[in-house]
Image (tube, rainbow, N blue to C red; front, side, top):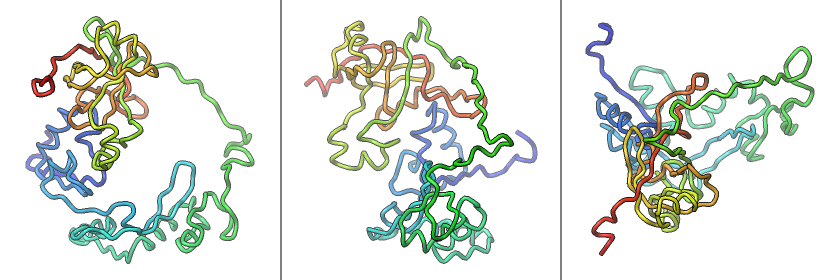
Length: 307
């Protein structure tokens, strides 16, 4: 450690994220969170990350606040308050502003309209899109040529911003994965979402209907793969990588290729990111969530399940 950092307080402020479930190699991530001198988490629920926090700030949910969201299709949408916040909760912008004030910043936003006005003042993409217009129209697509004109559905109508007006396509070389299957770990583990549960399940697993539909951690494998390993659908299995092992149930899924095991990352009781590889893509710096070497073996039925 650099001498300039000796004795420095290690702190982190996390808002609306759940890295104790969503980051790769969770054992390392959770050890890092536990080693912080001070962790503040701004959240709706006591998520896995919030369990490591020294302070939890009670945030507001999407239907409990006014504000805008901009999608990757360039549509700026207005969200409106539909529900009253529970006692003790606070608007997210208010919490952030109060923290800013208490560390000496002169922040004086009156509400989300003031925040949007500042964004529009420094983001050319928001030209001709005002808070008042969004209140009237609910959504506007950028770029927008005038306050009384609709946004452009196609962003490069007259060509690309190059001297020739043409785009440039560059072939990308195939980069091998950081970790490939071998004799010890002969399968590929990939992770993702499932229809019923979003991301780490912080909200959807608290929805009784959704959790009733998908209540238990499962691993999806090709039917032929299960037959080869003499594993029945629904049987308990262990999935293991070089970073750890988890136990869950096997599910036959014809959409999964042979040699691959797919595990949703929403189940805290069998967190698939305990297994994933933290190696980073050299360009995008994205962890290799979707590919690492794994092995699948039958597991003993727990005593309580066998009764």
